Length: 244
Image (spheres, rainbow, N blue to C red):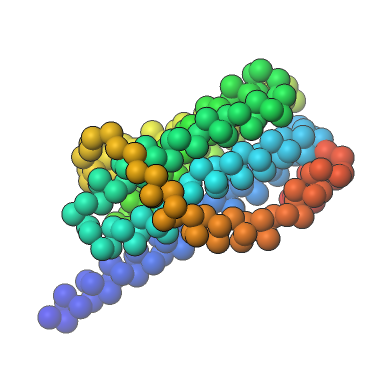
């Protein structure tokens, strides 16, 4: 009995530890990438890229539509229908993806950057959709692995291009990184735990998750509104220094 209690305690401690690592790895790797780009190229390049990065992050946050918090409650109430809930939510949120594409089209981005951003959005949409499954099942290892693999993909590209790195190539690297994350998380969760459900759209999921979206969006903007203002009013070098 004592051995069973100790085993359960160790497993719980491992889960807590991986959860902490999962929350810390994203900001740490993001800062590492920014420092790597600035050191390999210039502050101006990173500052110019930031003006795209912050809008992509905002678009991905809106595309998530509060699904993690909303679906965690639905999964807890009906665990046997978790797969059906997930797929229905996924297909329903796909309705918002073309609107995000139109937003970046209105920004009049160069064609190479625009297509790179679209791939970035689509892959990021898939990768972040699996996050709720990892949280519900308390399996954070695949997400940590995906973040490190994505970081290595960006880091290798920055070292490979060195002084030839550009905003277009940075967008390509981030879209490739998002694609790697989408592949890893899909392989980790879908094949082992989720089976395919029929195509279904339920707009009530959007209304049900709206309060979670608004709550998360206000928190995000409260933390980052200064960066948006700096990006709009200051030069690229100042934006890079401020962001780091």
